[in-house]
Length: 579
Ligand code: AMP
Image (tube, rainbow, N blue to C red; front, side, top):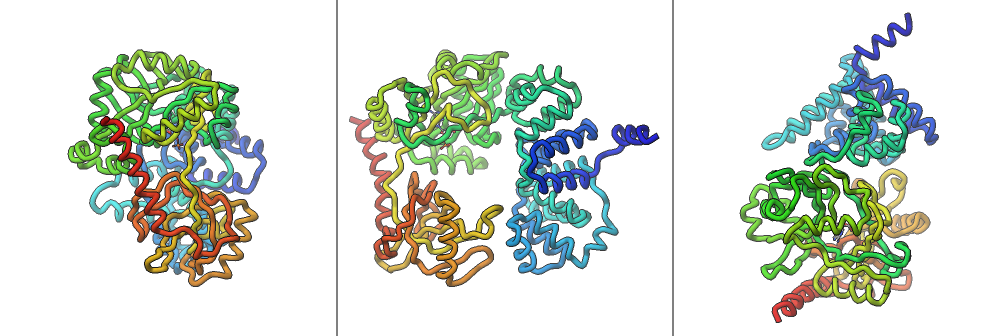
């Protein structure tokens, strides 16, 4: 009898979101990986086919599958306001709950549990199913344009008002896209393998090609191993990008790649993955969003040049001046933001495409081929589209000259690509290494700091870095970073900063400018974010300068000089090229 009821439940009854939330709560409580995998596998087995992908996505903290172009656009300030509204607590109660855990989901659970309205909420609760949660998430994502913020808020509010504390906790985590249960994608692959009894290698391969473990799980449930083995690249379904790790210098790159490697200019632009089928071309950004509409001239170039009926290629789009010389990255970003006035932007910010990889052509996956073979195939197919200049060498001096040359012509540095390496989607590995010369470091003063999140929530770990204005004597912020210090240094600096505190605003503490740190960065950008109009890109603290006083720190005038010098360098390129 029991089995009949269970079987009935499995086949007919939709699964409640509460079951998923409670599973996540259990995942959060344990660090035992095998236990986690088993719990998730058992849960996956009970789901209806159409629930599998949404459930897998949600357990990983995603509202939608990774390849989806849909986004919720619900920020955590809005969420905070809604939570306060439905629970009737004031800002301090909420922030103090938040400060205790550093986790907005847990804070939500706490305030809901303590809220006066708790009983009412539970009494009137309409239990959401996993499918209903997904439908609501879709409604939120589809709400765009005038008045959309309010409409989104209403849907979120309705979902949270009828949710129990534990459901609300995980709904909030899905809204902001951060689960923090320790159950990551790799473990999910194992759970899918276990639940549907498919070898892990097949699951991993399918996940790599499809770019989404939820979709893989759904196919595994519906069609089993046979279904997964059929999976191949599909044009217009973006593939996760292969990424690069940073190498300290050229010598390290050569060493990592066994003495000899292929260096390419590292272009400072935006990564694109281009899909073509017949006359149709789509361009996806680094985050796999469809940016085709922002780049009409690139679409034309690809249509004209790419010799394949179907193909997936990758490259970099860079902004150029009227003489085709690279200009700073931020000009290009303006272009991406102006999708609605593309016509004007095309004229204002000309762009140029360089291609450097090919993943698929006319029914054949090419990712298992070695890098140099892929590059040869690409060269045969791309007509007049340029590829980044390449040097294959085992010679350190030659490679260093190549790096200097790359910088001199206005590029960012070099990429080192292991010659016999395959293309591994979604992996930031050592097959590709990036080498960027850093600019001369600056000594800056910490003027404020914020408490971190998660593990760092009790530490002042995010620092506002300032340079002195010699004209007014004021310290002006030029950057913010949480990178570079060890846990011990952060603990010590938190102590020192607390003693220097002038005022506290939410999670930010303003301090007397006293502590000097040495900061490395890759570029000085023009930015409206700070009063001085500039911001350091990729700032990271390299050491604490206990030997320096704030008066000896670098000045705003010096930062401006460095900023201007970047252009001077680019200006020089122009002259050289014209000669
Ligand atoms: P990063 O964004 O610092 O992680 O550096 C990796 C990025 O450099 C890639 O995602 C590309 O957008 C970009 N890039 C520039 N030139 C190349 C190249 N020749 N090969 C691969 N990636 C490149």
